[in-house]
Image 1: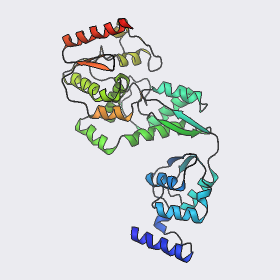
Image 2 (image 1 turned 180 degrees about the vertical axis):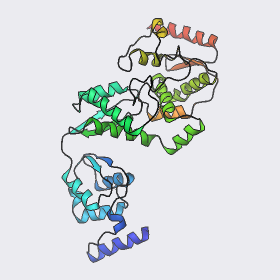
Image 3 (image 1 turned 90 degrees about the vertical axis):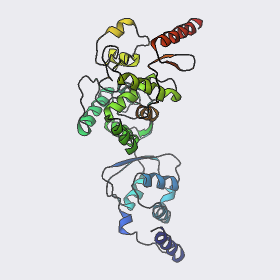
Image 4 (image 1 turned 120 degrees about the horizontal axis):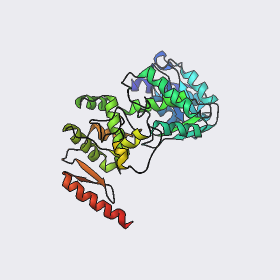
Length: 336
């Protein structure tokens, strides 16, 4: 096939003719709309790569050749493009030359953000109110998922991937939710799905564990170790006793406290892992890829405890060892 394409292109160049594009290359054949961000200053080669990766075009060589023949390579506008199924090459060219309306807006969502924090950031960028964004997440849940939502404060918590996104000021909350949710679905590859099946875990359970790791781990290197502690405790039906889940439950996914008191640990709610065995009913934040990977590939060890030290967490196998680590941590605090 590559040889055939090379011959056809050579004929075009030698004869100065513009060949008609073969039918199987002229129309895209994907099932759902595809959204692609063309950054400012993107070259024809970069645009072809983006379109090919997402399945919008079938041949980068044909696309670039025809774009040059029609001077599209000099007219590409940056922006957020949505390509519909069965779009033709000519229609793609028209969109790229026309550009997208509105001013560009960059939405940055840090790893570990809650859905409510994401909604507030969307509102701060004037892309809709927080309430509209949260309503859009509920709509997306109803149209795409059917997992159990009892005891959840926000059904789509943990299902929107934290990243930097390029939108424009005409983008709607529905556009943003769709893009972030689709990105998370793409992150959860077939390898991840197969691994979840090996562990006998659902997507919801994996994202829940990953969100805990996201909020608890001090740095990337210890994510698998924290994950191992979680699995070790689950294996022996030991309370997870994780402060981040308590904090999330106390604020019902909205408010955040910086200091956990003993009274907070005694406050009953579905996310209080000092009171309830097993994992919480759902994610407590948006996990990044590293935390999702750690949730699926926990480190094998005998640790059951950890406490913050000077450069990350210090892990312990027994309660007595943990108490010594806690004492060391308190000495560090007292020196500050």
